[in-house]
Structure formats: C-alpha cells, structure tokens
Image 1 (cartoon, rainbow, N blue to C red):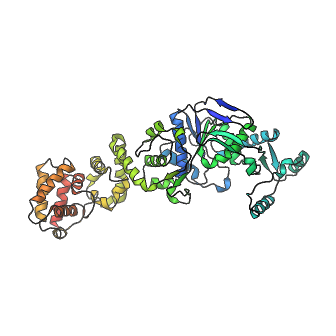
Image 2 (spheres, one colour; image 1 turned 90 degrees about the vertical axis):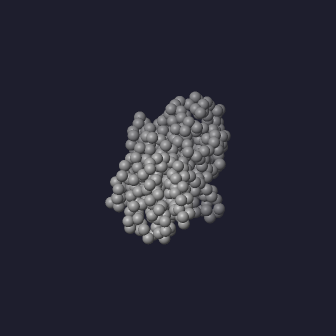
Length: 509
C-alpha cells in the first residue's frame, strides 16, 4: 500500500501533503548489543515495506554513545540480517550513495547542522557543569518531580557566551524547544500530540566531545539519506515532537513516521537484552531456521489481514499492510517455536532445491556429531538423507533433532544381543526370519501404510507373541530403543538391506 502520503501537521501551520517518492526506510540500531528479536522485527517491517514498494532498505549504525559500544556487535547485526534473508540494500558493508552509514564517521554533518541552528537562534551553548546538572536532578527527585534542565544558559548574554568560548570552558549545544504541543499524524497511532517543552528542558543535541545525541543525529541522517518513512519502536513516539521541531528549524521536510508497538513476552513483560534466549544468534546456534523467526515475530504482532503459521518471506512481503498495524503491544509466544519450526522445516524439505541444501547440512552435522562411529557410509549418501528427511518431516523441528539419542539408530548400528530380544519374545527367530523373507519377496517397502499391513500379517501368524510384542522385538533389534518413530518408518528409513543386516547381527549375538 504505497498510497501513503507524507502528512505532517505543524502547530503553527497547515497540514501539507506531498506525494511520497520511492520509499527509503532505515533500520538504525545502536551497536551496544547484539541483534535480538525486537530489533529483528523492526528491521523486518522496514524490509517488508521497502520491498513491497520497490524501495531501499538502509542499515545505519548509531554509534554516537561510544562508551557503551560492544565489540563485534556491529558485524553481528548485519550478519544476522543477512542470515535471516533480509539484507540491507545500503550499509557500511555494502556501501551506497548516501554513506558513510555509521554515525561516528559523519560528525562534520552534525557539527554543520548544529552551527546552522546556532546561527538562526534555534540552539545555544550551555556551559552548565555536570555537578550543577546532578544537583538539579537530586533536587527534583527529592521534591518528587521529574528531573529536567532549567534552561539557565538559554538567556546568557552574547558577550558572556563569547567570553566563555574564548576561555575554553567546556560546553554542549542545546536545542530551544518551542512551547505548545506538536501535532502530527503517525501512520500507526494516527493523530498524536506531545508538548516536550512542558515535560523536559531543552535537550542537548551536540555533546562536549563533538558527538551528537540521538535527536540531532537521526534528524540529520534521515534528511541526508533521503529517508521517506521511519518505522521504529513506539518508545520513540514521544520524541517525535522534538524531531519535528528540529526538522522545521533546519527547514527540511520530515519523513512520515510509523511507530511499531512493543514486542513483549507472552506474560506482558518487556523483552530484555539480559535474556540470552532473545538474541538472534542464539536461535541460529540452536538450528532454528531464519524463516521460522521471521514468521513468529510477525505472527506475534500485526500488519497483516490474518495470522497463519508457515508464511514465507515472499508471502510476508506481499501481505504486509502498514495500515493493519495496531497500537497494542505484540505478545511473543516462544512456546510455539517448535510448532512454527516443524512447519517451516517441512516446507524446506518439500522444496527440491532447498532440500538439497538441507541434505548437505545434515551430512555435515552427522559427520561432526558421529564421525568415526558411523559403521556404514551409505547413511551419508544423498538418497539416504533424502529418505530420512521425507519420512521425518512434520515430526522434527530442526536438523539437530535428527542427531539426538532418539535418532541415533539412523546413523549408527545398535548393539543388541539375542538374549535381550528373547526377553521380549521367545519367537525372535520366527519374527526375524519372517521380516527377512518379506524383504526378499520385494515390493514391501513402498509406504509405511503398506509395510504396517505386512507387519500385522506377520504378527498374526505368531503363536505366543502379540503384534505389540513383535514390534518391540523389531524396534529393539533395529534401534536398541524402546521409543521413537514407528517400526515401519524405521524400516523404510534404514532401507531393506540395512534392516536385514541388523536383524542378522542381533541373532548372531
């Protein structure tokens, strides 16, 4: 739906309407932490909006808070976007016409914007010390008020300002907030008003070290990078009034804003970066497919006419509708992750090209996990991997699940003795001979249904063993386990020859 207009209603003006150009959106995380599910959802919604309308998706790193940067976080963010299948069109790594794409390399632009605001009287130098600001904060807290700067330096005489600058007194640059409420139309929250001057003092826009704060940097970069739409978390909604004032003071046209509701845990608590299990890298290490994560974070929220499990990325692009995003928080139910994973793994298995990739991945994982314990290298052949995947689809959530104890029999011949089998049934020889004869007759390994019929017929001819007992004998001989897939599926997975080999070995022992 790119009939969206860039609507902005100023407090002192009229609502202006400009047809939006080809959309340019940005995901602008701070590399003070690794990419988590909340960030992934924000990036995804930006990606969906851009791709749906033939626009550009930009990754911009907001690293102006140098003291909180985490080594490796910047690379992790782009790595995880690429792994998830939503790579940026422009970024520090990929380049583009509007770089640099990391804010610490754009300091001159912020300095120029701050100077322009000083010249037009929209900003001023503030020489208040940290000690004074801390005192203001403590006094406000002691009286039960919200801490705020008292705008003391706003009215400093020009000659006093010049004197302090000449003396090298440390200073920051603050933006003069207009009094009164800013009214603007948010694409999610509709018409919104906020009066920042009534709630806080004039904000710092350029720090003493020459680095900008988020407010100035985001405005300057959105303008310089020609960002048409800003899709960001709803925690920034109340800051938008300040950003609109900055745009107006710099005489620039602001982008359209769409603030996304928070992504919360199922119990309504906020996702925390302290929770190790919300980082995208952790899900990747656990073998979760990227399309599974994209599906579950969109399923938790809104932006679509309906919610169904199993949507692929191309379907998300086609079905995304920004007007369908609601204002209430999105609840992420990770207890459903296995359900989503099973569906998406099945989709991959049923796609011939993508299944070939799965076979290669599974082979590498089997080699890594079981290595020299593999007695028959046939299990590493593509046809064997294909058979296992087809039979297990809809039952397993990830390839890693095929490496657990339940599925060890697929790769390693079990050690089972005749005595163990005879403890289950005295008719072990008859059961094994009947199955071997079934294999020799050919045509029995067509499907689990057909094989089950044959196995029931074999059991019906036994004198002292019921069907369930015969199946326990075969399960034990084939896998050395008491639980797992059906015996028919085990036999189809292993193949006719391997079934006979295992039965014969068990009898010999």
